[in-house]
Image (cartoon, rainbow, N blue to C red; front, side, top):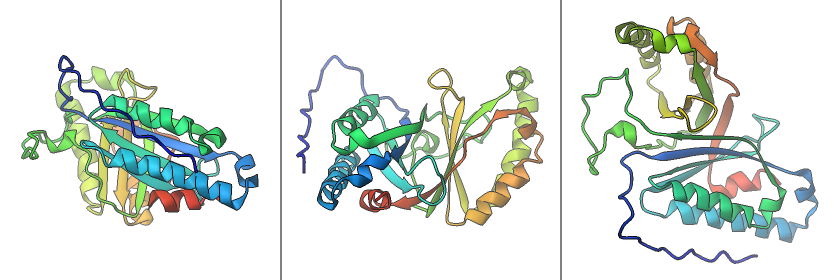
Length: 249
């Protein structure tokens, strides 16, 4: 197995402090068919190398990684790496190191979404800060529920031309529908000017049926008429790095 050398950490005294908001990447990977022609020993070593890389990034302060399998739910992606960090450099380093692994030569990334956390405009802001003094909405805190549902989201430009009070009214109805499904937790992140979408939403739930019913009901909300795009949609199953990689072969 190729040994992964830990990077040297250099602290620049002139560098600005970490941002109060987090950087998010949803990276979907597909394994090329040729990889499955490698020997059992080679594939085992490949998987172990990538799993070690994921765990190395996850051990860092102010960073977390979650892995999910899409085997059985998508035909064009095999696993998801959900990476969250205060430092954009961690996202860059993960991808750079992954590219240098043996398995990296056999990976394609058919979908990738980059976003950040941000205080919501439409949700009550009277909430207690966490121990770092940040709003709870600025920190991604996965619940480790069995399933994650992810999709990019774009609204019409006409939506942003509506008076703030009107947008709040419509979103109030939309949010009330979501509260009827307490077992579904939403993580909303923002991509304005950073990527091709405006938002990336990730819902955690232990029930696939609850999420399906929630989305169907929300189609009837007034706010949903301002949707330009909310596909592709991904149904992901929470797995350890080793489990997610084992599922690909």
